[in-house]
Length: 280
Image (cartoon, rainbow, N blue to C red; front, side, top):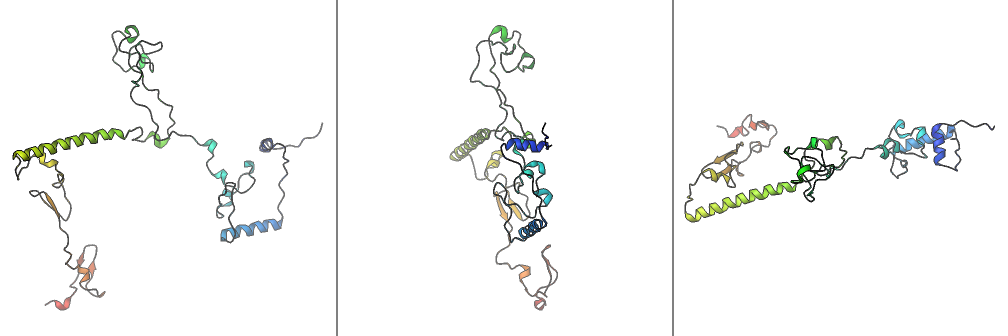
């Protein structure tokens, strides 16, 4: 019986993938090879030599530590690579996309007219049993009456949501639902505008007209403005900003001499007279 050489499990698996190719043992580097490799590494760090390239064509940062850039012996790499540091596709969990969520409501497109075997004995829907039925318990169930068969609920997909997907407040929200709210408010505003125009034509709306409906004008929030430097006139319903007149000169521009009076920009106060010669 011929003597067999002992090999590691990873080596056997590698030979299985590369059938027909002889696996030569890696040659030991000489002192000169180690010196050249060290010089090449220093040149790459200094930028005088091009960086190493992995199997996908990406440059490898020469400043990455060796314990990170060097792949383990059982990984079976043929050249420089960082693939062992990147997420492995075969081990990455595949989560459901954000635009996919559980269906809501019932499917009214197909409603049965007769009781079906295996359906709920109370309402007649196929998607749940009698003990899980949320409809009002009937005196005589749909199994015996064949009347008022409830539509089936949607068959819910098997979702694999991520940590953020489970806690997303807006997941499953349809933006078209907000369109109905906008249309409702537009109809209300249009009706108020027509009523106001009708009162103006009849002469019932005077100049000093002020009631609860007047607050619905475009400037209805003016009375609630409470900002520094803002003056609100509730009678004229206008907002006036107390801005500095452009002709006024700022205090710190009265005297540009750095040895003149000190101006504190935080409190906007000047500690002394910027022009003491003009003082009496």
